[in-house]
Length: 332
Image (cartoon, rainbow, N blue to C red; front, top):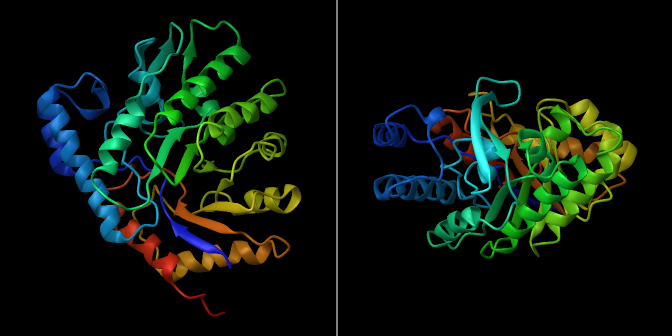
């Protein structure tokens, strides 16, 4: 029997009170805030925000609870943006949307930082619910960053993977690790990097005993990088069935997938809140299309990060995901 677990890729929107308070404390808008240089008042605001985000997930009844990543002003680039060996420079468009991040330029060896572990430890102190860690995948971090130290693409990608592996090793106990890899879709690796991208994922996944999900979104991974990703020793690959159900289904049918799967069946960028029965129907539709494969676990998730949404809509989608996971099978 398949376990259906409700979860998200994290990166939640800031509550309105936190936006206002942090803007006042830092003196300018959130898109320009300097991550990692927080005084006690700012840290207190983030602590209260984290408590609210964790509490809301527990209230919804999600099967996996994330820290919320409220401090990630630079979105997936955050783990580098706060690192001592990285300079943040000009403002760069975050993929193809109206969000922006500060370009992280790696100027030295990427040693251990511990920023993500500290945040997850703070979340662990707030709940007994099963925790899920969220990190950028190594290839997406490679795509978002600029190298002024390693001098070679393969070495840079390997250095980022080792850095992320060190961060993962320091995490408190967690049930699941989501590695967000939208760049596999948006800027897929070419001939020289597609196999190396899979090896980099392996390096990070080997650093935890938790279930590891490589979640891609904003479309489908091209065939060759996907085939290489299937060689990675991870527990599940995530598919965006909101943005492109046909090509994602083709990848699964043509190349197979892991014994577990993550399905992006809730739109993380649209304020329309899906009915739980609709979400469950989408999950069952995917299962029906691949009758030869019986999944041990289905992670039912939003297709993208949730910071695009108003907080009330994001919360409503959490409720819908949790309820969908608990529904009996939808009758045809």
